[in-house]
Length: 525
Image 1 (cartoon, one colour):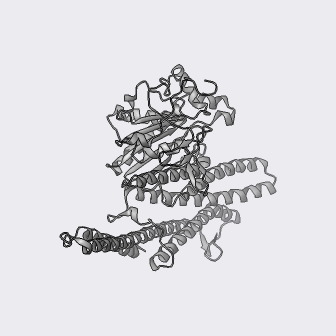
Image 2: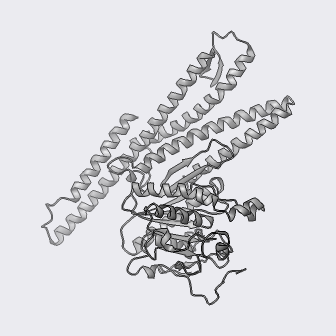
Image 3: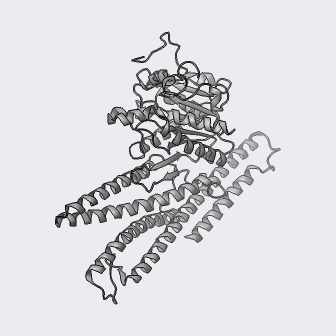
């Protein structure tokens, strides 16, 4: 598999280099007329075929590299397990896939049982990992010999220089995700078997302890399953960050990019708010990121502009639970405390610097929803205080407050930060009382330009729905042809993400909020 990787990678790089040289060929520069036009079309067609073949080769190389890494990992784990089994006079029955006493074992049956209880879960996890590697191996081989179609765009992000930093990080995170899921799946099976034994034996104390462990293992497995599901919500996704705390009471953190942020011309990072969790929210956020990317790229094409867009779902912090759902006074207090936002802002600011370092020329937008708007605002303020400015534009929507007294604190160019609110969203009402609990001035008091969240026709001629609830801003509705159509709020986000909000006619692309005579348009204002 390593040889396949090297051969496919070399082939991809060589093919893309030929395409590049063909594009710079000067021999036809002095041709004119119909012959020149025909030659240019032929050149373009040849280059398109070469690029496609080169990128397919890189996709095969990447699949082979993943399979080879997986094989190495499984072999290393199996070697260690065999060594540990030998020390206990145990062996592995390869036909039954069980850890059993070895031919020289002379210990007590209870000692063999204890050794098996220690080693069998590890063997189960290795078997799960081996099956996953087997699927990767089959994919690499089938892609290499043409039995499996290579996904469109699967190889292009790697480029002729090999994998980008995000691709390498994503591959490592996905491998870790597979390992952790396999181990947890094996642990759940083992705990379930032990719980059945304890129940049959009438050991209530042990059964209670095992059920507690089983609940924690299932909860963590559900989080990891959700990360895996989120990666399948778009054709090209990258697990750019994965934090799996050792403390089972702490939430798993994950950041998923749709499109490669290392190679995209435009990047948008979205930070979620109250009640968002990796388990319940991440797949939906990735789906929303895909719709945002599609609309942003549609806008670029409509205006005849070049550039690709990457959209990122940042579930890299732990927002407070929604007190309306939990009815918990503690959760209500957390919604007016900035502790979670400050902790999240530290990770977010570090992540934004990483995105900028990997792609110094990209235009980066930061979107914050609900409590996430506070997190995003604090991250920008932290960066600005250090003289760092990785972000070009920001939009805060459904915001309860930004802990902001002056837009200059964000470190953005004048007019590059916006707010947005829906008429039926009561959360922005908290912005009016933000000064009372130390969250700065009301962000909707005219400090920042306000984008529209009202229904209507956007500049691209599409009829769009308005925001009707606090969660609606990034959500699409189903169009007459079954297509996903962003609301007016999502369209405005797409315009900012595409980097066309400050074009000479950028104001014509954005839809600004209507001027209202009522200073408190929200219910309860």
